[in-house]
Image 1: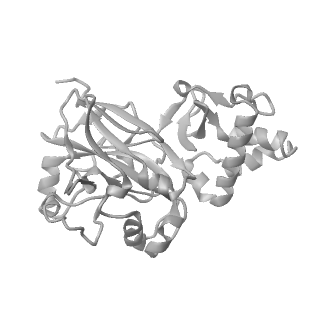
Image 2: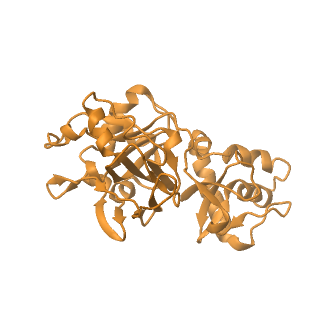
Amino acid sequence: MKLYLGLLESSLPGQTRIFGEVDGKLLDLNLACVAYFAQVESNRTHSYELAAYYFPETITGFLDRGEQSLKMLDLVAAFSHNNGVCGLRGPAGERVVYDPTEVRILPPFQNPEKSFVIGFSDKARTEAMPKAEIPAAYYKLPQTFVASGAPIVWPKFSDEVDADACLAIVIGKAGKRIPPEKAWDHVAGVTLMIDITARDINKREGLTTNNLLGKNFPSSTSVGPAVLVARPRKDFEELAVEFAVDGEIKQKFALLDCIFAVEQIIAHWSTLGIKPGDWLATGASMALQRDRLQNPVPLKVGSTIRCSSPTIGELSHQVVAAGGVRR
């Protein structure tokens, strides 16, 4: 199932809710769970408390509950589908189902402890074949996250901006120093990400092995729109991602094309410890196209960019000048 983090029109800014997609509608999973306990388990007395445990306000909180929440997700999804999504209501008549346009979709993780992208410096890319052994990475700071539809603002300090389509591997189980053969036990799902880079700044920073400012400025990290969870490993590895600029496909890859396997990435970076809600992304510039790595895609102000996958959805943005004035 695809999980979304969102706000309703009536919600206060911090009152996020988890939504699941069923039959093209967005299901408030907390209230759908309340309805499940009330109708199927005949437990009206504690249905709200139980639902709040399995489906808290954030996807990170949901993943932190572990396997029991994933099992409850399956039960609630089957219950909602079998009882007709459109007619579903909470025990007190609460609305449970929404059209996608009625929910303000947010980046699925608001403040992960670790949000890394696997990548080489510009100099190292020319030396990256054959496969390197260590998956180097850089931080993407949470204050740079934006959801689909938000503008990508061209930074005033840069003359050269590009983008890379990525798949973020979402951690669902905590661990440290995880051996490669156990890596997939810690994967909850995947989500889309677009890594926006001020390349001229990044090149200068690369001289001192620092990749902070060129990779982290407002709207430089598009994440979402949903987290795809509870799928077989094979489905994740073969999932196709495309990146297009003004309707023209510029990048295409799957996890199986990437020079670093998920096992390598998790084994290496779990040295720091990983927790539910952390994500480790790998992109098209880490993926082979025939016998060469793909390149990040140059952008210009006014362009429309789109990162998409049939099973996750799409991230879509327009690139605008600072202040919103197109040039």
